[in-house]
Image 1 (cartoon, protein in one colour):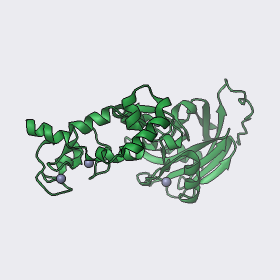
Image 2: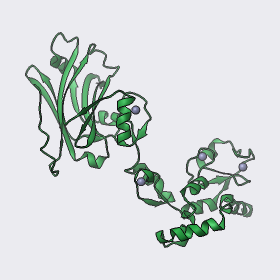
Image 3: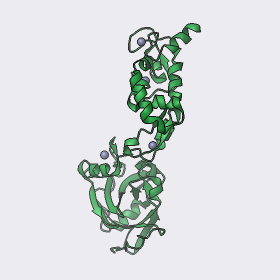
Image 4: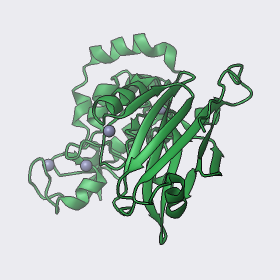
Length: 318
Ligand SMILES: [Zn+2]
Ligand SMILES: [Zn+2]
Ligand SMILES: [Zn+2]
Ligand SMILES: [Zn+2]
């Protein structure tokens, strides 16, 4: 037990590398930010080297307790420890079961900016609650809203808009009303779902209109819904309607666009949109039921509390 503690104390060689001068100058430039001198010292190291110190050398993720180390002081995270079969990945020595309490304590005393700080998040957190915040941070990047592909691109909204246009060749429209025709020559192929996406730009925001075919239980259906390119809070400022019909019948959907924080699949599976049974869709298509020809009209508007509401006049095409 005593040996373990000894080794634990020795396990932060990186802090020895910090030169006194560096700490001195950091203290003087940072003293106005905190009343706790301990934190001032540590945050004075600067986020880069603090991250390096607490970064698992194997997987490069931030380390959280229990932080492990080998007999030579090489640290690694608990996830990696279970994977390396008792060999230190750095020096190949037997790993044992040594916890790096000193580094855990160092982490505990840290206050670090949210990792999306360069994207605009002003928040500062104790090390151990930072992760929780970052998972829900409003400034975290959005995932590409394109459905039907394994696109892993993330970024802010302007970036994703150009990504959708340039990489996915998505149609871009300006305006708050739309009149769209969806034509498919073989409406029987519902299992091979077709995804269509159109981006609308109005009220200074971007919206994704999804249209797709899928199997709802045993029934083949088509579904159209709108997602807001922004966070949940802002999405509540908008409403939209969708209308589809022909031959004296029509279906109307009115709703609030979901944020693209909610995955395309999640929105689809919650049926939060206009759902058209295939039989009805074929009826709306007219003709010999060999071809799907749906005209979907719609409108996006801003909710009442806003002075811009009412500017948008619906222009449904019948
Ligand atoms: Zn790791
Ligand atoms: Zn080692
Ligand atoms: Zn944040
Ligand atoms: Zn993409």
